[in-house]
Image (cartoon, rainbow, N blue to C red; front, side, top):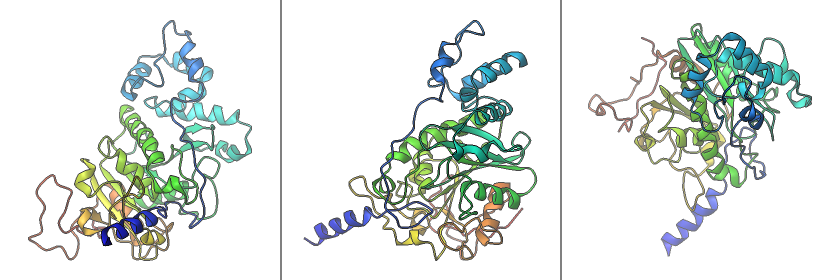
Length: 377
């Protein structure tokens, strides 16, 4: 009887799992945007080059990269002008073409929600106006960067809210901008809102359906970066974004997975993610996500808290961060640690790790997870 009661409590609590940046509000169910870029039907039918173009839905990013590498500059320009929405969103296309294609697509877009995205000088790596809209923006010189990072946000984010001024350091471009500034020269950061996020708190935030769809899109996006000759990125996953990253982890080409303000990653421990990436976790003492029960029952909830020592992630200090959206605030210990990870100079040797608590080589499931202190080598 007692076990049955605990199960009922877990079920009730799991429905309160939240993952947004706006706090405790009700949420509406969302339909995930999936499939190829807008304009793909016209692209498939186009024989302007005398042959079929790579299928946006079936061709891998590596295959797309090989195709574009074999085109002349004139042929690339022709496809860009004829199909800006496909070229701008097709993973594996050279990033310089994607910037120009999305600039054209935004210039032709009459939705006032996206007007600010068309400002000169912005490096828009993806833009899809369908539904609530999806977007990715680059901070820094992605082509020459020695180290690349991707920021994956949680709920209440889309192309229409991308430039909101509220919670500047908690909104995707604010996170990416401050991380790039802190990480310094030789780095580039992508703010990636490339999936349908939950809105507020509701069944979407408590389940993994949107995260499942987002995981596939994130994997393809990062594969597109590496297919274009860029370094494997460090991926920073905030709130519900950490659920996306947890599901994607085993397929995701990444050097590091960094989760912050996470409700869980749909894994019992770091080893269960089956990733070669180093896994890091941060949660500040004032983050309301700490009130979310770390359970999984009947498809609800996202499982173990990644900052729990038993999970086995490397711990990131966050004592100076405030609230759910404060991890990237300038001057905080969390941002300093994130910058070290983004630069590739972070060392996991932290205070309080017993000398005999070493983990077998290759395992992320640390018995005593060390604390990153922002040490550089």
